[in-house]
Image (cartoon, rainbow, N blue to C red; front, side, top):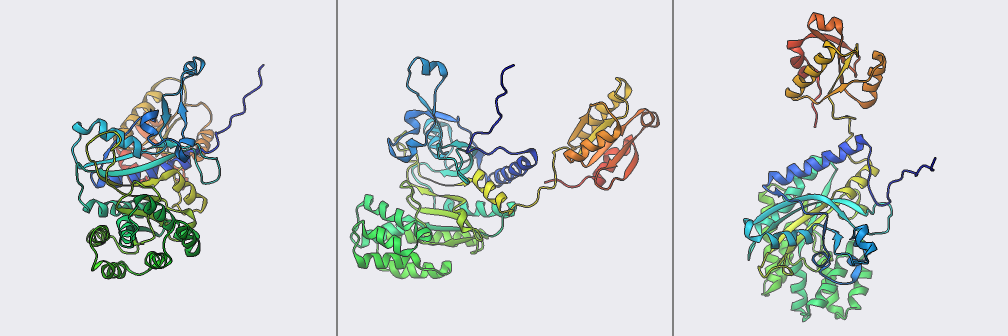
Length: 458
C-alpha cells in the first residue's frame, strides 16, 4: 500500500473552518450590499490575463511577484507562458473597460470582489492568494469631482455596519504637493513622484528620515522645511482648508486646482453626513503609486495603526491609456478583505459569530425504515424552505440522542422530530436545542411556531 500523502495547506493562503467562513462571508455580504446601495454593478474578470496585458511595465517588483499560468503539455513542448494570474483588480478593469467600451454606459460604476495572487514571501499578515473588494467610477473624457466624496462615504457606511471599531479615512490631493513643488521650481514630474513617495512614508518613519530622503533627491533646504511643515500640519478639516487657502491665495495652476478639489470633497462629505472623525484631511497621504493624480485615500483602524491602511485608493486621469486612445478618468478604492479579516480576527475586533451553521432547523426521524415518516420529513423540509427557513434533513440511523448530539455539535437551534405516533396524531415535536424545551405542534401551526421561536439571523 503506497504511503499516504500528508494533507497540508499552501503557505500564504487563508483556509477557514465553516464557522470562520461564515464570518468571512458575512463581511463579503455587507461589503457587496454597501456597494450596491450606491448603485454599483458587479463585474468579474478571469483569474488570469494575457501576459502582455497584465505586465504593462517590464521589470520591477510587480513582475517578480507574478504567477505565470501554463499547462503541463505546453511545458513539455517548451512553449513560453502566455498567461499570468492577476495581481490586482485594476489592470483587469482597465482591460475590461477598453475592450467593452462601446457596450458600457459612462460614468461606469463597477464593483468587483475576487481573489488576486502575488508571489510574496509567505509570512504572518502577508498572503499569496487574497480577496480584494474594489469599486471604481470610470468616466468618458471627464469625471465630476463629486464622485471623489461619494467613495469614502460608501466605505464609512460599510465599516460602520461591519462594527470593526473606530476608523478614519485619511484623504488628500496629490496636486497640492505637486503644485507646491512646481511653485518652488521643481517642475520635473519624475522627481515630483519620487518626493511624493517619500512624503507618503511620513507617518511610518518620521520627519527626520523623510527629510534625509527628500534632501538626497536634491531639494533645497528651505523648500524641504516648508514642505515638511505643510504635510505635518494637523488640525480640523476647516483649519487645514484655511491654511491651504492662505498658501494658494496668490497662486494659480496645479496647487490652486488641488486645493479647490480638496475643499469640494471636504464640503461634499459634510453634506453626505460623514462625520469628521471618520474622514479627515491628511496632507501627508500621497500614495506611492504613480498613476494616482488627484484625490487619494488611506483608511486606518484608530486603535491599531500598526495594521497599516486597510482600504485605499484615489483618482487617476486615464485608466486604460495602454489599451485604448479614449481618455477614461476614474476614481476608486479597494478593501483588502483577507488581510483585514486576518488582522481583525487576531485582535478579536470582530463581533462574535454565534451561529455555527446556516441551518435553522433540522428534521430527524425516529424510524429510518422507508415509509410514511420519510415522506413526511421530505414534505416538512420543503414546506419550511418555502416559508423561508434553512432546513437540514438528517438521514443517518441511530438513537435519538445521537441525532441531538449531532444537532448540538453543528449548532442547529431547532430539531423537528418525526415518528409513527406523531404522524398518526398530525403533529410534530420541536426541540429547542438551546433551552432543551420540547413542544408538540400541529402541522398547520408549525411555521407560525418556528417564526415565534427562531432567532433572527444576520
